[in-house]
Length: 213
Image 1 (cartoon, rainbow, N blue to C red):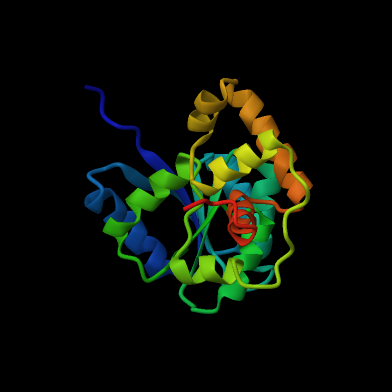
Image 2: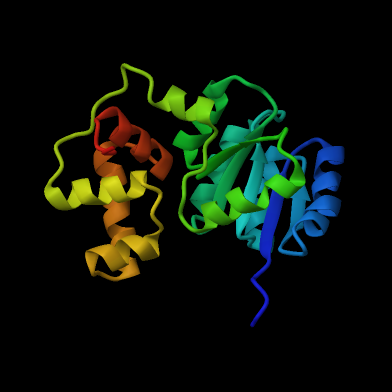
């Protein structure tokens, strides 16, 4: 049986000890299934770094000197849209994390997580899941958020599948269409809902009572 593919990570963080810790511990704690292939402590260089090393995922610390982590997330998404972005923070305030999701981050993870705890959520992000801690999901679902616009049956099915955390492949199989079609439909749905990420779409689905039992 072939070995599972290695998850290649770029790290955007201005704390050298944190970055070095990931470089040393991720390969050791994941049996070589995750490795850091590039890093920078300069938020303005984030997009350039990701463009050079083309990782599977970019881990971005939200609390960095100007231009800051939020702009780094947006720049990475704009220049290398196929690279998934995971926002990270050591703070409890959900506001920066919500901004990062709106800027295009696919997930948020606390920096307090141990290296051996990172591989499952990183693999889930690569599979199309939106990974959020409970307190952040509750913030997204707080009362007062706008309800989704009118959706047809196909769009409602898509939104429910996204909210359930189904991958592009799974949705394509369930709807009997190609993965390319699902990607196009997902992009159109996000535009219609006026959100930028699957996480926000899932939050809208929950707020509108579309998640079922």
